[in-house]
Amino acid sequence: MQKSKSEELIKIKRDLKERLVRELSLEDIKPIDIKDDEILFGEGLGLDSLDAVEIVVLLQRNYSLEVKDIEKGREIFYSIDTLANYIYENTKSNTPGP
Amino acid sequence: MAQKVDLVKKRGNRLGFWFFRVFLKISGFSGAYGLLYVVCLYYLILDRTAVSASMAYMKRRFKTHNIFQRIFGIYRLFISQGKNLIDRYYVLSGQGEFDIELRGYDRLYALLNHTQKGVILLTAHVGNWQVTMAGLERLGKTVYLLMRPEDNIAVKDVLQVDSKKEKIRIISPENYLSGVIEAMNAINQGDIVSIMGDRGYGYDTEKVFFLGGEANFPYGAFRIAAAMQCPVVVLLSAKVSAKSYFVDVSHIIEPRYSSKDKKQEEIRGWVQEFARILENYVARYPFQWFVFSDIWEENN
Image 1 (cartoon, each protein chain N blue to C red):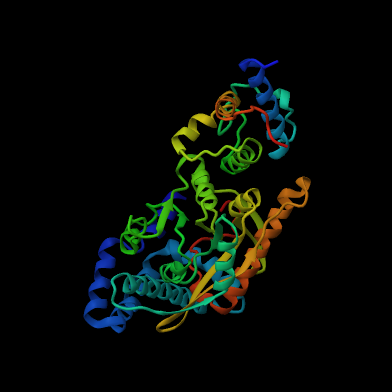
Image 2 (cartoon, rainbow over the protein chains, first blue to last red):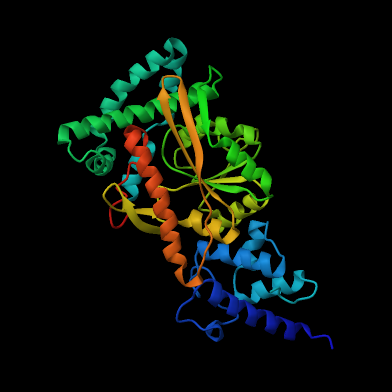
């Protein structure tokens, strides 16, 4: 049975939060603590540009996605919501890789 | 702190360059270099910021020298940097060339052609990078410099960096996310990204041993390389005679995390390796490292 968009997005967001905590070694933060609309860089989660490196690689390796347009990148990397939406809109199967 | 940085950046304004261009054209190297001795004396006496910033390096590199010997060493440093800029203009204006010995070129060429990915060139404020870029032209790749384009507009004009005709482009670290996405895109398309490895400019640094003390070196290049699984090629150059330089790309570091728990420790190890290579360089060419900053200072 095909999942609805909202179900898919919930799954993508959950995966993203788990991967971010793991890949960025975010100590004292659990995936469940990260809000969907929390700003990723600067404020909110407080990630920096070097953390962006890991996120870009995460998109490439797990979702086969690249971000070439910098202005578009500002929108995509704003929050978990925007990142998840980008993944959903640009992946065929909406299933993360290994 | 901002004013301190501005004074250093301004050494080399447009009028200054104009004078050197004229002397180079009229009287060749001897005239242009000769003018340098006077100009550098002016900066030695009046540019207290640059002198005090250089003193930190002089004290560590020449531990047994007295204050006068160190001041003379700073004078030599200024002259060396001035010759560097004159040489760059000499090449760009088409007045001539330098002999360039490329060390490690074949290995770098093979590396770039073995995979579709590019490399990070980790360099330092050494030698003459315009001559260096001329030496790397044979690689046939575009080189992206991660640097602030406005750091010295006169230098940028003279060196014709970021001109559409040239294969040297700038990625400003003041772009979104410090230009990291642009840098990664360049590497993914097989090009080269050049990053300074000896000054943090306020970015994240690690403390490593350098010239007998703990100094702050930026680690961003290694973090990018480890994530992208691309090599870091240490790029150093030096003037070895009046008309010749060497460009060394023989040191290649392949950053790969062996353990997620020890990432920062491994990053520190790679930065230390770079610092060790740079230390060997300044041991042989002490007056060709142009970092006018106290990198041992806690808040640098």
